[in-house]
Length: 470
Image 1: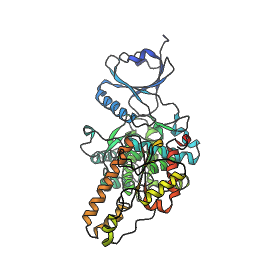
Image 2 (image 1 turned 135 degrees about the vertical axis):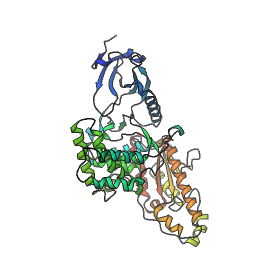
Image 3 (image 1 turned 45 degrees about the vertical axis):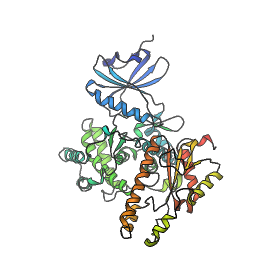
Image 4 (image 1 turned 90 degrees about the vertical axis):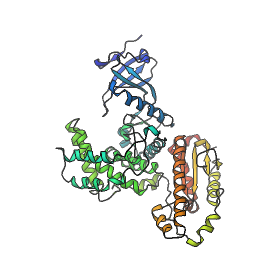
């Protein structure tokens, strides 16, 4: 048997890891912020693996981590796959063995790519993150309380520290005044550290995900503040693309409000956090904090200066339609009774346009969550054609209009239930590996060609364009 080459004397043997007898070499990996010891393993058969070691006292936490990574592995995304978990080194260490992601670090590749490619890779990342967030949270993993108190305690640690920066009062006050903007969404399983530094660019031009060790169950919007810290310094088109695709180009106002709080908090607390590393790391976090202050105009605005719709207009789908037109309250009930649940005019128009392009589909598929109006089975794409009223488009505008009309509570409750069903259907479909597209009826009627383009670009985003049409 070939001799194993170990570059770290603390781990010359791996008793307890049965597969180690087939390893040819083990090389330490010293990149990253993780407390785990990481190794690149080469097997006698030429396979590459990732070995993570941690203290025995972390057994329960690492066991849970392995279970959650296993959940992620069922999503159909490209990622470092879980292989083995156990105790090694005569009971002193816990190990996690994963597949190795071949490719280059995305953060190193992005600046060398075209603006369009950067944006499209961001959209690919946003689609992946949306799938990760789609996994139903197990009851035993559901958090007992929000992280609002924790965020304020961390902020207090910063205020009491010796690394405060000039002008930080604006961000401190912003977090305290707007802390209730976070944790309004139902908690999800998070990657926990989702940014280009933890993504791998493959030879085929697609990306994969690594380093799930910071996973947690938390507010889905919390996952985005690292775009400001670690994403924008690498590629702004990528950051915009990730946000656009995650929200399917319908970015809600409450996301920007929550994200601004997370950015303000992280920009300060990360400076304290970096003290446990080096002064260079502290200086880096200070520079990022100052950049965040500028991007959010001293937190007088919630949408950062770098976010723009220009990339979406040039390279992505266009889904924005006109605002809903208020209907006459007295005629609404009559009109609603006349609306069909299937084979509506908007469905027929979109189906006809897709058929003309050569796409074959199923319609009103009842064995899928939400009964999608159009299903492209080959590409695992589920399409919904939503009426503006019933599905609550521009809810912050529509709700006050309803409150001033007849049967207000009836319509508000009805539409809210529909919105909840839509959200539940989206999550279930994503968990099952489907991509979900929702169009507003007016967008279909106004410009069906653009809607077809959205479908085609989604196929491209999923890396399926080269497979051809049915």
